[in-house]
Image (cartoon, rainbow, N blue to C red):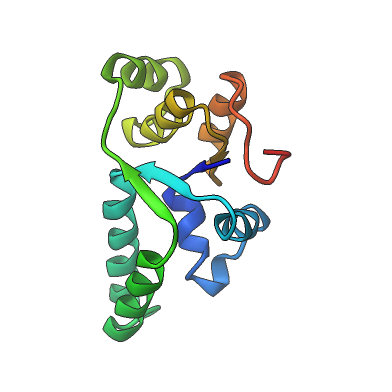
Length: 136
């Protein structure tokens, strides 16, 4: 079954000092099941890469390599959104609209969610969304 992945998990795939068991589980799963994500993911990951370059953690060549590797993974972006649901989730759980977008996607598709964000995990559990790495 496909699953929703957010940027917090994907960052761990290419930043060795940010490894996490949930991210590892999602990466193993993506080899068998495709992932889907919000269009925000594209921007969030590129921002992380640019900030990592500015801090000397990556250089331009490594950033290019990471982008090629990410492009080779079975991750599709979903630009659809149920706007009212998105707004209500952000309000109900005091999430950023960005994080609510991942939750709205998981609910709309009825897919499990891979995230390291604590507030998003709590909201997902409250909404009955299975979490990758916790039986999902």
